[in-house]
Image (cartoon, rainbow, N blue to C red):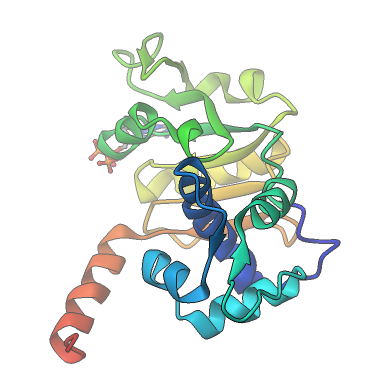
Length: 212
Ligand code: ATP
């Protein structure tokens, strides 16, 4: 994402893909403008936050008119580097990894899983969702310079050692789906998604902060 030169807050940057996806759908349905209230309802972000987010990139919106969909789309496309495909490697072709390989990310985002790695002989040499699966021993051979992101769906016990190898291969970002807390150098961006924790947190909120 080209957000460096814009200096927009990280929390705002994280919401951009959400806005982008919705605006693309609006555009496809022929809508030319959208209000922050409509956007808020669709992406479940409060409208004050949307107005603040949009003000960072000069989309101020007009009272009674809302935002120009084309203007926003052009901005998002540029900012999110939608012209460029980000190549991704996936490590661990288990249940979760297989689901990701079968899910066509490229439909919504310009990210493409190029290759996958596992240690089970039955999986190595196959293709899952059109993505070739290689043996982890071959990680260094297949991690070319243009693969900048890795998805980790391996058992937690091996996550750190694989991470260290990915770092040596020059990876820039890691999406960690394992429960392991990983150590990476400062220049590498690490996002952690622990599905079990997210689910527990949802259940906790439902019990303690019921939606009225
Ligand atoms: P999931 O947690 O995705 O549902 P699972 O329960 O099928 O997967 P796990 O034991 O979590 O299986 O392992 C996920 C995948 O990671 C498996 O396909 C396993 O073969 C693979 N795996 C295990 N160790 C390694 C390793 N060192 N390198 C790469 N892949 C590994």
